[in-house]
Amino acid sequence: MKEKITREEVRHVADLARLDLNPDEEVQMTQQLNAILDYMEKLNEVDTSQVEPTTHAVERANVFREDVVGPSLQRDSALANAPQTDGVHFVVPKVI
Amino acid sequence: MQFETVIGLEVHAQLLTKTKIFCSCSTEFGAPPNTHTCPVCLGMPGVLPVLNRTVVEYAMKMALATHCRILPRCRFARKNYFYPDLPKGYQISQYELPLGVDGWLEIETEEGTRRIGITRIHMEEDAGKLVHDETQPVSYVDFNRTGVPLIEIVSEPDMRSPEEAAAYLRTLRDILRYLEICDGNMEEGSFRCDANISLRPVGSSEFGTKTELKNMNSFRNVQRALEFEVRRQRALLEKGQAIVQETRLWDAGRGVTVSMRGKEEAHDYRYFPDPDLVPVEIDEAWVEQVRSSLPELPDAKRERFVRQYDLPAYDARVLTASKDLADYFEAAVAAFPQPKTVSNWIMSELMRELKRDEREIEDCPVPPAHLAELLQLMDRNVISGKIAKSVFKEMYETGASAKAIVEAKGLEQVTDEGAIEAVVREVLAENPKEVESFRQGKEKLLGFFVGQVMKKTRGKANPKLVNEMLLKALKG
Image (cartoon, rainbow over all chains, first blue to last red; front, side, top):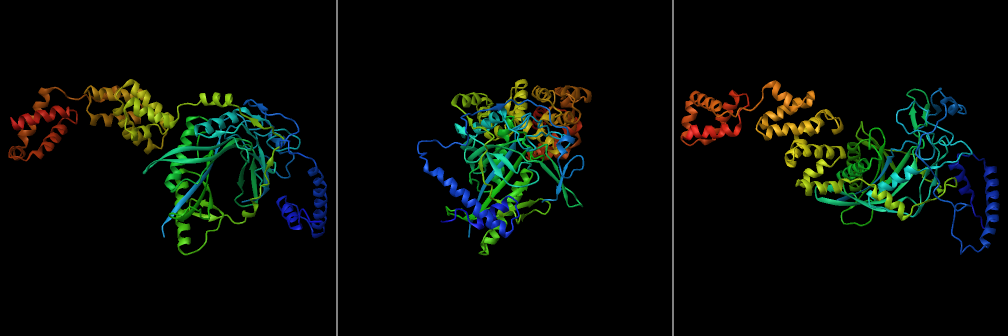
C-alpha cells in the first residue's frame, strides 16, 4: 500500500514541533502515523456530500465578552512555573 | 533597462480597547513587566479564550472606513510557530475567513489621487516583548503585550514608489486616528509596518521576486528602507543576478537592509481553525449600526472644507491631516470667520512653530481663540501684519493673549495721519538726493522711503497710509 506520509515528511513535522527523533523513532513514527491515517480513511466511506463543513460540534456563534478590565495574576503567580526567572521576567535562552 | 517598483504593505495596528482580545487583562501601556497576565494570555492548559466584542466593532470600523466587504461569517485560526514571545506555541489570528476583504483607500501623490487596494483586514493577538541581555546569552520576556488586540491590514501590491508607500501609510494612520481605534504611534510600536517589494521591467505584467522588509519604526525609515531596497535590487538585476526571496531587516543606523538568514524554512505555520473559539457572524443590521457610528473621515472632511470654507484643495488637505488640526481650524474660524486667512496663519506661522518644537497640535500653547483674537486685531488695523507675526511668536512662547502682548508692548499701529505725515517729512528732508532721483523717474526708490518711515516708527505705522502719504509728498 502507498504510504500516506513519508519518512521525510515525518522528519519535517518533527522538526517544526521541535522533536528530536532518532532514526529508529522516525521509522516507528512513520509506520504508526500511516496506520492512523489508513484508519481515518474509513471516514471517507460516509457520504458527506450534503453536509456543510464545520470546525465545531455545536452550532454556536458570537460568544463575546464586554471590554471590562478584570483582575490579572500576581506576578509571582505568573512566574511560578517558569524554569528560570529574575523575579520580574521569564528568562529564556537568547534568541535573535 | 527601466524598472518599475512594486510595493505592498502589511500593517499591524494595536487597537485602543481597555482589555486584551481574549481575556480581561488590561492593555495599559507601560505597566511593570508581567503584571497584566492571566492563565488565558499565558497559554495555560485548559483555559478558554473569549472574544472581546469591542475588538470586533473596532475592526469593523476600519473595514468599513476602507470600503471593505465584511464577511457574514469569519473565524479565528491558529498560526503555529515557536518563539519565546508566544507562550502558547501559536498565535490566534484569522486565515481563510478574515473579517473584511476587497477594500481600498485613496492617496494623494504628485501625479494626483491614486487608489490603493486593500486585500484584507483581520483580527489577531499581539505577542509579548523580548529584551536581549547585552552580555549574557539570555533574553527576558514580558507578556503584558501578549493578547493585546491587533488588526492586520494587507494592501494589494499597488504602490509604485517609496513615496507612495509612505503616503499610503500616512493615510491609513490618519483614518485609524480619526476612528479613535489606534493611536498610530510607530515609535512605540502601536502601528507597525512590513513591506513587500520587488522590481520588474517597465511594461511587464508579471511580478519580480520580492523581498520582505521588517524593523522599520518610523515613516521616514519605511521610506528610506524601501529606497535602499530599490537601489539594491536594481543593481543586482542590472548585473544579471537574481533576487533571493527572503526577509530582510532594516538597519537604521547603517541605512541598509540585511538578510535575516535561517528564518526561511520556518514559514510553515500549519494554520487550522481554533476549536476554542466559535465563529463570528456579522449580519447587515450590525454592519449598519457600526457604519452609522463612523465619524467624518479625512476624505469627507477635506471635501467639506473646500465646499464650506471655499479653501483651496491644498489647504484642505493640510488642515485635515489630523482630526485635532481640523478641529483647531474650525474653532478658530468660528471666532474669526475669514477661513483663508485662518488657514494661511495655521499653515505658515503655527505649523512652523510646531514643527520646530516637534509638538503636536494638541499641545499647542496658542489656543484657537487666541489666534482668532490676533487676526481680529490685524483685521481692525490695530496692528500691522508684520507686527502680528512677531506677536504670534510671543504668544507661542509665553501662552499670553494677543491683546495682552499688544497692550503691554505698545504695539498698536500708528494710523494718525498727522503723526505719519511728520515722519514722512522728516525722511524726505534727510534724503534729498533720493528724493531728486525719485522725481526724475527712479520710482523704485519708494520702497526705500517706506523702509525709512517704518524704521523710525519701529514698524508700527500703517503701511497703506505710509505708501499713500509718501506718494502724495513725493509727487505733489
